[in-house]
Image (cartoon, rainbow, N blue to C red; front, side, top):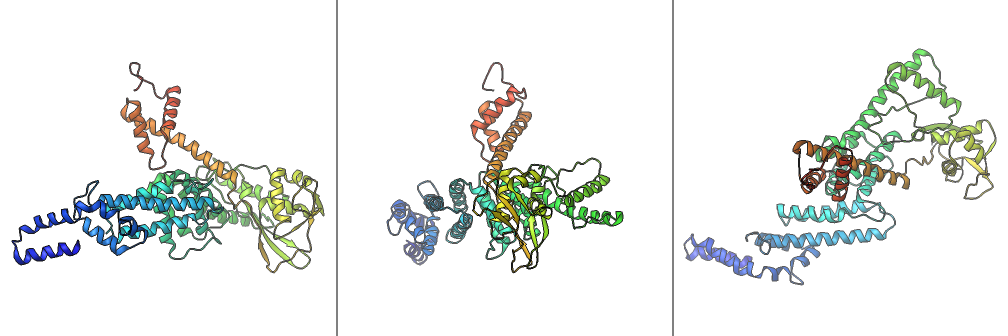
Length: 505
């Protein structure tokens, strides 16, 4: 076809008047391309699907170049090609989803999605000359399979975990520029319909990275938040920015606390660092009633006194399960620094008073629930680093089991990081995150309904549902049923009322 069109152009130049060229080429395009388009597209070995399957970019480029000459309609020109490209990308994407569902570990799913997007983005930008039609079908195709759940997990959750893995110290190091990877993550994020679900998972993981000092780079954290802000607006990232601000303010507070200790000559006998968080920005943590050792209680009381002397309108609530301690284990071979959680420290410091304790005694002394205590004893007595010795031996912990300090323990390192438990996202946390998101969605739907009704005063029911749905699309895809339920809830609480003559308004 290319050759014949070129021959016609040469023929016009040699024998005919220039004004006939356009009409002649149009007729050639009609006869050579338009009349045979569907046959050419559907050929088994050289059709559009075969070229996509075999990644023949030169042939695809030639096809794009020829068919963009034709007017674009549903049966002619680039539109039918774009639909075949869309179907192909959806098929490949759904194949990846099915393959991933069969796997137990979904750690690499986000990276596979990024690789797949890179591949087809290169196709759109190369052979298809960044045509807006193909950009649109790339977006539509990815939206189809990116929003499919993988087993028990949503893509939003897996993408957030992928971010967590590359942002924390000791996580998987990604080849290439981190900023480029973050751009690709935000591009995938833009295809998610549950953007609020991603935000909530990301917020919980960011909180753990910051509080447990696991964040590899503050600049990278800010960079991703800025990219999300650009994509979804300031309200979407306000809590994440507030968390980073809190960490900076806490550093200043810590410096002032150190000055307070020096001036009041209060000796704590240890280094103490406290992070003060603003309730609204951070995930909700349960305030625990753990019984702290005297040494830690002294730190708590001193900091409370310092903080209350500086501000009179704020009340401190202590969340010990996110704290970390460094304690020195004086073993027979050599002393070793142990980096552990506050709960693990509460358990170990009991052994300064007695040689051995049963699990029941430890629970009574620390006021930890038996279920939680067993998890921490597992890390101290049955893990890689056995700081405590369990009697009788065995992998399960019973209430009557006895624990004693293992003075024979030794290790090549002078400083050991124990498993902190809180670094991992538990199944309960996943469940509570989903519940939090569902609750927030109800409030977002109600706020949107009230906003629309304040502006319109009266409105047909179906139109209200449609407008609220469009307003919330940026954050999540609300079910019409949920919107209807919230409208009924607002009517029952007398925020809205139905028209007396027409129940549909």
